[in-house]
Image (cartoon, rainbow, N blue to C red; front, side, top):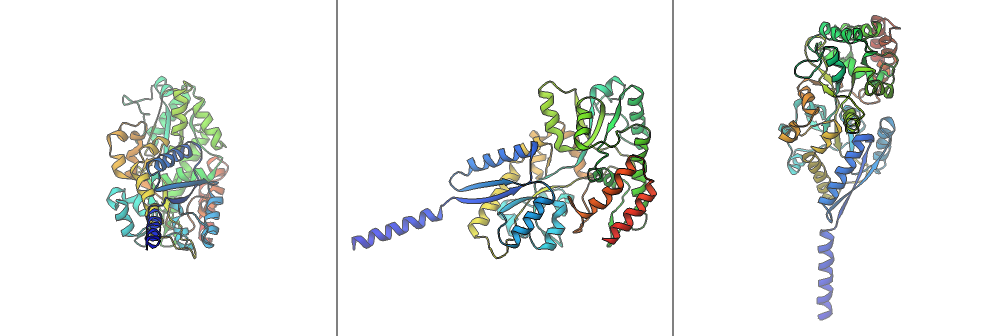
Length: 421
């Protein structure tokens, strides 16, 4: 009898320890550089806060096509991670491929997150047919970086410390010409050797005209081709007049700005840590970053979102315990995303960006207003980071922006090739 009682106690003890065993969450991301450093810190903070209950085991893979190809392959054989970072622009293709789990209304309730916590544009970016397939973590738009010292010297800085002429194409071009007349080598540094990057700027300018890439299944329908042509012609004119750098790749663009050769630069918010670090080291001038100038009808800026998604692993159902742990990971990171803002990104979780701490962050607070003016990629499996739309358009953007191809001809070729897709 005593031996039986001991066996019962041992079995009960094992069941109890099993019930409270640490849950390991397999994580994949594509984050490197400054945002990669910050994500690693957030994961470390999460693991410390959940010691003994949940542990994230993180792996960083190569950004772009390699990452998404690996996810697709892994999910098809049940070997994808428990959670991963995912670009919102890639979600339509992922849903078509069947490699993402839906984030159900019950999941949102368990995470303590809701639609009202997010900007409508951001929420819609992760929604397909009224179902959500990811949780937005941030938005990462492009912005206008500027050298306050050079602009002030040329008399082109406002009393608020921003560049003059942000309200129209004519006024902004006057600022660019003023910088050139003041002896600045490149008034504007632009990534003109990389059409994939320039998509962001061109699409923003289409959005400023209420332009659409895809309408009812047709690319550049109606007058949308004309709106694309307007954007390309404007940017080509800057190159022709020597107002922006030509055939400049991404690293060279950053170098032109940080060296003081370019007075302004259009680039992603993810370069904010670069500027912050250089300034701390005493290697950078006074600088700022603001929403893109209004060059057409109204503000509009291209953006994408880093999101958290849960793979649909074929033949491998997630246990209730694992799902609970994954939802806790997403919830905790979303609610602690203020630190993520130091990577330049705008946290998607509204209570964070509404906080006094975020509003005191610069230059983040200066450009966070663009959240109300964002446009995302069209919802099609052809869109998204490293997708076919990017490839087609970038082929024509480079020669056009560098004054080697007529904008009207570029639009004609782009429209033909996109609709052939």
